Image (cartoon, rainbow, N blue to C red; front, top):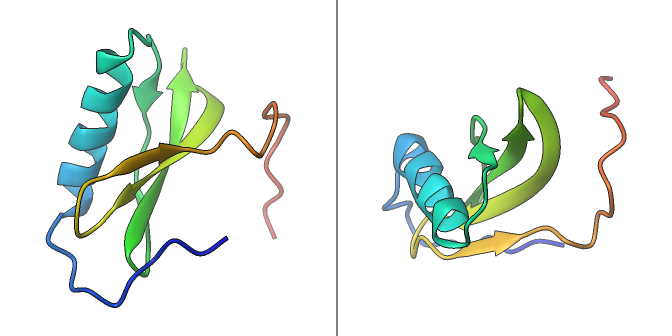
Length: 81
């Protein structure tokens, strides 16, 4: 799925991480936001628990809107190519 836009990024990667962390806290989560990866129109971050990947969310780089990636299912492992 591609949620990007052609609008210029108004939110930096550091701001995206802060927005993600605030979003998690506002929902009572003890997860932490990992390092953001930049994509056209958004940032994607892993959610972390005790230093291990638990899930994933994205932050729109123009609006700051957050969406949690529920369609991936339970995180098992990551394949490095």
